[in-house]
Image (cartoon, rainbow, N blue to C red):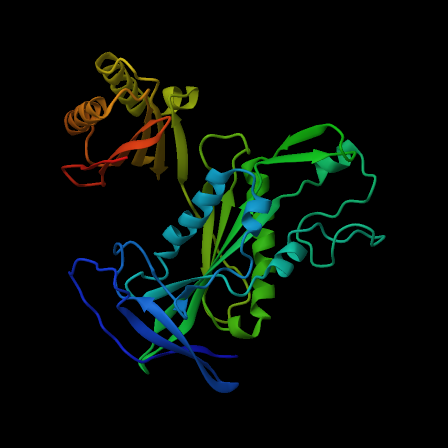
Length: 388
């Protein structure tokens, strides 16, 4: 295996200090077995939070993914893009502890590789698709029924890399995480510039296809020299329709140890985003729905320039973990912003229990006016009113 190592030249760990911005950082060097050239790199000394990974950076510059930007081309809904990226890091924490591992955007799955893998499998006449395409093959001139029977299931493969400092005071690649973005709704055109058709993809079908593709992805990754004996976490993400106002969610994950070539078992992931207000929320999440309706009415009665309240609840294993709330208003002056912010703060303190986190954004046509955040388990929210 070709070894990628980061030689540590200076370690300065400052625990419990307030962050400064003078670029005091932990200096690192990169070295490969093929040559002795060393390339300067750094790890920021301060972390925003214990919840975040420290990134690896070279020559004072962020190292972008080798497939930078392709996710925007492949996934239509920006909410899905954000959730897939942040959610993959969230699930990675269970495998790669942020206190021990450093983070880097994917360096092995390049744009060319993903364009090849995300295509359809080459058909029998060789006129459509690629030999390595993971999506079902389809002949040119296929009918609407053939399109529906052979949807494009896989839209994107996201890679994240994790490094760990070893006893020899070097940092090596010690794991990668892979996210497979699977469509829950397939949009297609039978004729170029023709009408668009839609085919809903059931979760069971999505999972079956995703697991088959995950096995193929694992086998291909193992053929890459650097990844032959590295642990690999693989997740399956179910996208929402591109018009959805909430993102999709992860539905399954697995971790294979270094050198393993086969996925032996999968773990079901029970996560879901719910829109408030909505019919789904009223039917399936009645307690939180009623609380949000009461909150909405309280704000409407207090503030004359109120437009509405929109909430996005994140549920894990059937329990509410976090609620993001947006309050759009008509801006009529800073005094009104301060007053409304104080009032919403009091509503949170009095009416919302702290077993879930809550984040409230008060926004006007001029942008965000204030922010109220209370993390899960905390008693008092953090408040910030923006100066403009």
